[in-house]
Amino acid sequence: MFSPLLILATDVLSLPTGIYDNWVERKYGISVQGWGSWSWDWAKGELISVVIGSLLITLLYAVIRKSPRRWWFYFWLVSVPLLVIGIFVQPLIIDPMFHKFVPLAQKDPRLTASLQELVQHAGQNIPPERMFWMGAAEKSTALNAYVTGFGGSKRIVVWDTTIAKMNTPQIVFVTGHEMGHYVLRHIPKLIVLNSLAFLILFYLGYRCIGWVLARWGGKWGIRGLEDWASLPALLLLLSVFSFISNPIGNKISRYYEHQADQYGLEVTHALTPDSGQVAAQAFQILGEVDLSDPEPNRLDIFLFYSHPAIPNRIRFALTYDPWSNGGSGEFVH
Ligand SMILES: [Zn+2]
Image (tube, rainbow, N blue to C red):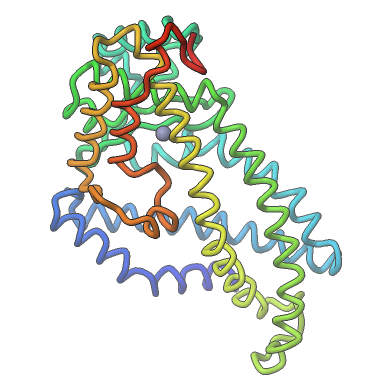
């Protein structure tokens, strides 16, 4: 009973910042979500995090009690398949709890036909069943598209807001970028990288929590690591680690996003006249609608940006030209 209550209490305490976020986004017209719908989303999110969080915590303490010295390794061993299952089921179970997904071919057959042309040109085999339309417009005005899942749940998702605000060549470029993630196997690579990061994280957690408890455990009334009372200290460590490791994750993400931009430019080069211009327009629209900072400073990018800054993406789109001297692209020949 302890862990569900702790998770719930933490999330209720952070409720004001969540409300403030939606309030700001509504004020600037990025969110169009009413408070009833917002509260319902919050409740669903809570349910998911309480269920999954409690299971993980129960598992963690069972492992800690079984093996006080090697728990970090055994917990890592179970966490990897759980991560893989999580990434597999997210598009199938979690995402549909918050948005509507429809096969793109049903919503927009003409766009699907253009995208099929793109896929064929790339020499890829991405069937239309792997392309989904997502209903974002009832909650948001922001534009997005993404690749998610793997194996049987792998898919390219395009938000309806993107389809509404971009023309076909621009959407083809955006999808080309998403295809890049798919073709360059970014999701399996991220699974491997995350697993390695978990191993380091758990080992550091094991080393640090011993030190923290030796130093403050008595004062905080924690009998030992196997005592449930150590959970808040563990969570505190976790949030410190994730704050420190976020910039590293963002750096890797920006690298993959840049690769996907390059792939998108290469794959649309022979299909779309002035493909670099079209890509730059797409980035411009994306930046305007999402109210991106047109001149972000380096520190902001380093700390928070999972994608390269829009001005950098535009500059790259307008200058990338491996074809000028009879050359060819790196990913698409
Ligand atoms: Zn991307």
